[in-house]
Amino acid sequence: MPSEVALARWQFGITTVYHFFFVPVTIGLVYLIAIMETLYVAKKDDRYKQMAQFWGKIFLINFAVGVVTGILQEFQFGMNWANYSRFVGDVFGAPLAIESLLAFFLESTFLGVWMFGWDKLSKRMHVASIWLVAIGTTLSAFWILTANAFMQHPVGYTLKDGHAEMSSFGALITNPQLWYEFPHVFLGSLVTGAFVVMGISAYQILRRRHVEVFQPSFAMASILGVAASFLVMVVGHEQAQYLLVSQPMKLAASEALWTTSGSPAPWTLFAVIHAGAHKNTWMIQIPYLLSVLSYNRLYGSVPGILELQQQMQARYGPGNYIPDVTAVFWSFRVMVFAGLLMFAASAWGVWRIVRNRLVQSQRYLRWMIPAISLPFIANTMGWIMTEMGRQPWVVYGLQLTKEGVSPTVSAGDVLVTLITFTVLYGLLAAVDLFLIARVVRQGPVEGDHGDETESLSPVAL
Picture 1 (cartoon, rainbow, N blue to C red):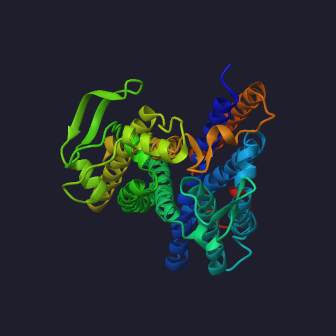
Picture 2: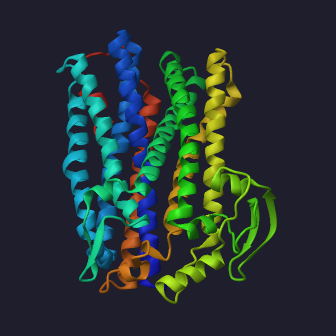
């Protein structure tokens, strides 16, 4: 049987990746819904109300499932990672408390106001409520990423009696890691919401169902998609450059760069990695590109894995500080490739809309249905690179992953909960897909501008 550390890592990975299927959809969809309702209030065009209400149903289903998966994720933190929780609890307490008491409270309260207030509030008050939901979801992401940024680059702390205590809240929220990580996640969420809307809209347009609703939905989402996907690449490039300062081992692993490169440094497009032998074969490289990506210039060397291993042993003591190079290398490339495809797909959609040829673009619309998966692939690969590239640290430079597990939880205990959580998540996924498919088949409510409480309720679906 695998060790409790390996099983706890698997459980953390499964719960985190699964939960993060829903978070970006929530953030991305709510901004599109807010824009749609704003246009309804400004233009007094009922199509935008139908759009907001239809996508609101999918948003509510996704929000509900996301809350449940988030609770299970927190449960496994307390069960499997007690030493980690004790070590960082005094630092994590503030941002996570703010997220729960302020951001999530704001988000959930005004979501209820929006859901039940269609005929009970003025149009301006009602549209303000959905914008407050959007602000709440963004603040939730910010405070959670504040905690994650500390794991990647610890700041604002002092060590006392074997655990970290916060010494500067200001340092925590001005952590450079946070201000590279948060925009990347936020913009990626906008892309995710855009592709969900584009894919479902493409499905409906192909079937000539409610084209007057789904064509403008597709147009809005494609514009957001092309802008946000471009900005994701810009911010992601800057975040990768910051790794040279904060986590050079992660950057070297993402390039499978075993020895320090020469100058200029080529970028490896493809390689067969032999991690045990610390070498690559069958490489396809692009000259100069790694120097450009690392320094924005045509020259400059990048430190290699083996040199960084020696440096880390000198600093932290004997041990293996090399992450899973194969996983980090390929997760980075899959993420980048998916990002390029998303930019191209959304840009082509904008072009077809400008040419007034979207409805006639049957092949493109068919491709946009499976393209819904692209942001989920990119998000997942991004988190795999982020978390696995930090190994063997759970808090970089402060606590090793093997030191963070619960001392009294056996491998058998973790295995049981791992299987249980996986089954529960599978059932939740089935329910989620069933409800969303039902909403898609039903389509927008036509000719009903009365009380939308029942039609917007996931329970009523």
